[in-house]
Amino acid sequence: MFELKPLSREAVGRALEKAERYRLLNEPGEAESICLDVLQVEPENQQALVTLLLARTDEFEDMGGEVARAQEVVPRLEGEYERAYYAGIIFERRAKAQLKHARPGMSAVAEGGFRQAMSFFEKAEAVRPPGNDDALLRWNACARLLERLPRVERSVEEYEAPLE
Image (tube, rainbow, N blue to C red):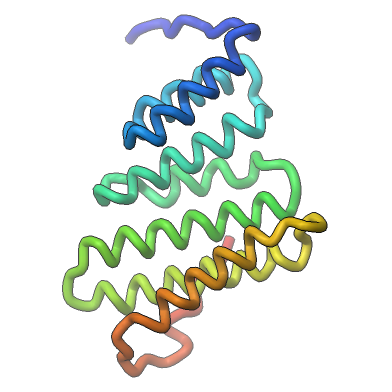
């Protein structure tokens, strides 16, 4: 095993800029690594936690990402709004990845994910800060996607899953 080299506190801001850049370059592994370095120095750094969560959801695109790895970040987020909003992001991004890699029945699975995301976005909406309609925008995007999915008859019980 290697002993990782610690990041200096003075380098945190620049490191977070690099993490965001790596996310935009579709290199979520690099972004995740940087966030983990930042969190070693500043364990409660909210920007690092959010970027880490988003980097882990970026990995859903190639179906290599695990929902649990992204979800483990949620309890560390400060604020009820942030926890609900980013939990919704996890389900929404996973559902989109499932649609991209469509196999028989995957549309129904993705639909359940979108509905879970929408439930979290509704929770976030209820406690959102004034002027922040991000949860509404995400809910609407999910609703529009669901309207375009092929309809298959299913019972409501199939969508019920633990939300936390």
